[in-house]
Length: 266
Image: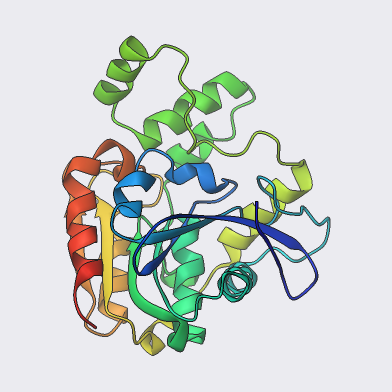
């Protein structure tokens, strides 16, 4: 169970799986490395995958300090790469993990091979925010109603119904780490809300693929062309009918193109 030491001394938990060129998989806001569990084996079959718990989640330290930011999370990734002896890796970040990946690629270009940004946003005044109906659904007083709203933002109703029939009571690892203290959850929320990489995006040198579900209301699909238009020579892959967790529900559509992109020569 390896731990890297971040610049401020925080312990960051990570795991390595598979073999081949290294590939960092970065999860979303308030989620640990299990976010990738449904599809990690597909990537580990071709790459040495690096999954980690963002500070505040999983087995990583949970400092009650103002150290939660997307550039800070990117430095935590560097600490993991250094501890694992990895000089350069491909990076696939989704949701808040995609925000983190933007800073990693912009500020440390020598450490990033190919870059995939999934269901994410440039943030700041240029990013497209979720609508008021989504914000209202996620701030209801009833936690069960919030959970249901989040599930339906992540997955299509038909797929959810199928999962409930086939695997009653299954755990979804995209709904957040329930063991997080409230201060860490607030820190993650602030980190995402304060993200603004607009001016940094043109500095990204890594070949980049931007992936997004066409029906994503949680992080609106309109952010995909903004990112692709701002990052030099970036490509876009839209997944028809997919919501925020496209990488899980639509793995049969999304995974292979991402693998093919990552396997290309620099």
